[in-house]
Image 1 (tube, helix red, strand yellow):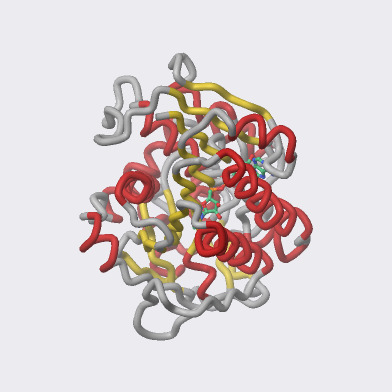
Image 2 (cartoon, protein in one colour):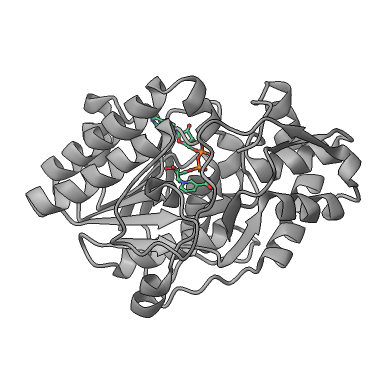
Length: 337
Ligand SMILES: NC(=O)c1ccc[n+]([C@@H]2O[C@H](COP(=O)([O-])OP(=O)(O)OC[C@H]3O[C@@H](n4cnc5c(N)ncnc54)[C@H](O)[C@@H]3O)[C@@H](O)[C@H]2O)c1
């Protein structure tokens, strides 16, 4: 099976590539049922794309890296032609950046996805896995969203992701393309660009600095370890039903204040290191996914509890300053996502 991974040099896409190929000396020996003969990464290497994320599998002869933009129709046509499956991660992914400038979000997330879908349609790609987000639903005060819940996105990021998510499903309904969509909650883990809340807070604290907490800190997120997310995507790639949406969650909801308390404790820091900042514009209050469907149909259960996952993640940032220090020196946004 030849797999094309768009955005495979980013945080989640690179975990997927490392998982598919099996990390040398790591805890994963590939994915049962998925035996890639070739894995191609198509990535534009924006500020959040980083070839160092693929270092553990760099020598694998099955890996090929193509530097390019998913909006480049000629290139996309050429690359897609050689693949059986596309797993589509490439996106502009940071909500704060979408508030200050929405153009790249609409361009990459919507037009880029349409460019890929058109190429997949022309070449008869066997399966197109579109990686979406719980943010397409907006915000929910109580209970949890099921996969049939109406979409009601609030930020330019989530609106552009909703556009791409619906386009992917439309190509299934209109053209009969084999498309599956995953919608996941907030990811954390190694190799996450230090503008997102967990790596931003951890790296600031490890550097002796302060951390910016939005508003009253009461916004609730369900935290999902990136490895569990990728396990879920692999299950959907392998066994998901065409035209269906599957939620992938971590099962641990925390307010930002509770998350901050855990990160402060993990870094031996106190609340004097927290700086309250004005709330994000249009900040969604709570996200909550019902993950019954993927559990019942595909056997997905999150395997890394938050306590263990956060401890390992903080340790990874302690041990890998050489990975994140140059990224912070290059400038990251000052406020967390
Ligand atoms: N991080 C999360 O918590 C989260 C939650 C839900 C959904 N998602 C979705 O998962 C996917 C991956 O997210 P991430 O956190 O790894 O993001 P990321 O920003 O770390 O990685 C995005 C990757 O896409 C690449 N890219 C951006 N524009 C491109 C273009 N025009 N052409 C080719 N490559 C391009 C970047 O270079 C980067 O390598 C995204 O689709 C995102 O919407 C992420």
